[in-house]
Length: 190
Image 1 (cartoon, one colour):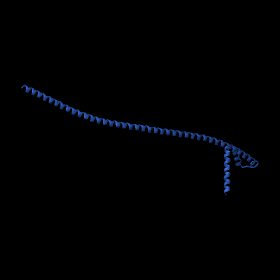
Image 2 (cartoon, helix red, strand yellow):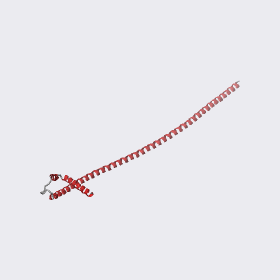
Image 3 (cartoon, helix red, strand yellow):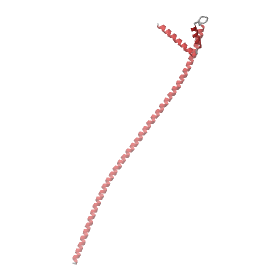
Image 4 (tube, one colour):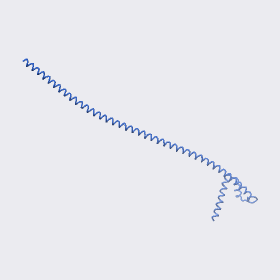
């Protein structure tokens, strides 16, 4: 019995080792399968995360590029608007300067014309006064008053005429000339 006990014990020990090895092997296989599944999930999810991150980065880069384009367009258009505004302002300033030069020339020339007309009118009035004096002297030499009876109205007109200012005399003379011209014109027409 000793042999049988030893053989049975050895056999039990061997089966126990085999069973333990099998259990360890199954456990290792299960752990290996679990680790493989975990590694597969990790890599699969990691790849999905990387794809998602790559997509997010690509969208972020595209958004940055669009932002840069918008900013560049904004500044470009802003500069164009500023240039256009500056050109318009310069045009307005130039127009204002031309207007001021025109107004200055207008008033300068207008003043010169008025001064010239004033001088011309003075010269005309002086010439008319000389002519009136010449006409008065000529009328005095041929006047009907020298020893002849004169109506009071005629005498009064002559005396009143002598007291007039040179300007008024010139005006009165001009009116008389126009009346004579009108009379001559109507007599020629008939």
